[in-house]
Image 1 (tube, rainbow over the protein chains, first blue to last red):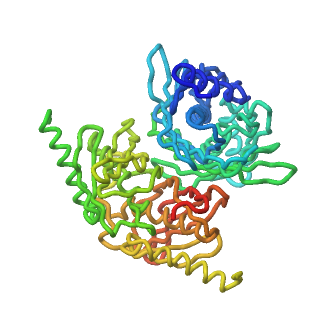
Image 2: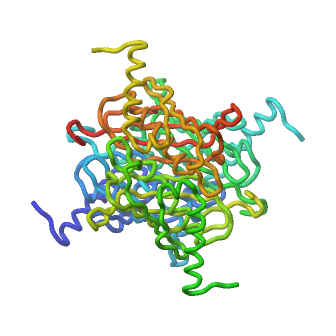
Length: 148
Length: 148
Length: 148
Length: 148
């Protein structure tokens, strides 16, 4: 069966949402998958008091989580193969303060062995978006039969 | 007043624990600061179902959180200046499964403008430790008066 | 004196070229600064046999050099302050083979203490460009009076 | 045929030196492989005027080259499989000035799909070593038959 057009898009979105729901930590964070198409995704969370580091900004670990998650989800949009993150790296561009945080991840280079991905993280405050962090994740594709 | 010997050690440990308690996300994770001396710290968490990624391992974002937190805390042991993380990078060496996770962070190179730190993360299962991830964090020291 | 329009552009380009000429390794590589405007630069080299790794592709170290150099040069276009690289990170997306290599660097986020930059590296072969690597560099701005 | 003891050591050292000799850029730099055993290597270069960045220190690109090269060579000591670097990351801890530069690389975690490696770079001046940079490289192991 081959999906195309809108059906394909909604199949991809459905697949990413399923995986998102299977992660207990993503559920606790309240991560919502708002967009997913071939090669890119958008996820978001609403700020909660629980998410703070010691001075009340979004915790660096959650900044990293959103970036790594959006990167991994962008990988899901281009392959059915299993993969694991090898490495992720995050740059903290500005203090992460806002009501909503939006991570936009995309595949930079797909490959048989590795998928290179990137993500920008925006904080939304009073309706305007500000880039607060960026980062990248390398996904290592597992050979068929691995990782059951 | 100059601390020395055991008093200094316990002052450092107390300072790191205070900062740890001020982070709502660290409290939710249940991060415990088990050791802190000049240039190095050890923190740990107990596994909970809430911490899972989609296949039930410790979520990459929490792996990153532990590494970034231990790195930042190692910075606290060598300076009273304020600092922020510029960047952190994590390598996922093995799937992170265990009952307890221990992050050991240390300062590689202190500096007036930057502090370079590193961390190893171990999973404890049936009493034995396994290295599951490592990483580093660059801390940017803020000029006096900044960031009140 | 305030430069504007074309004069400003050519002043920026001149400044970057001067710095490029002062590096003996850049001269050996034959790095040419082909564009420079506020926040972005383009540099290039022509392939030579001397640049090979063991299987004849462009050496990973030279890939890194081009990315780090373009990132640093993009910093020169936005400030007169002195700075040093804190960290650079390179992703090898494809084997780097070509007649010409073009690195396009840009400032992602300028700051008083740090400048975050990024770069894409293209290999040109038979007239067509292919993205072969990307990376980022964090520049640490030195306080006035430092580093004379 | 199974090597053991000194014969194995010298076979490993010979293999790494062969690969080193096959890289034209390594020959230009004058990289010498001074030690190689299972899981670790040491390489060095002597300072030359050609190696400078704009203020006369060792160029960041050559710092990166030494780190990436020592990391890759440490991978050669544990497998006959082909591999390529996925990513390397370098921290610049101090200005790199010296008469000799020594990079010590080692395997942190070998794997069937990936090899995680690390390296410290020392500058030698007036007979004493100083740590000037560190970094890590992820090596992606190629399936058999690939990359002929």
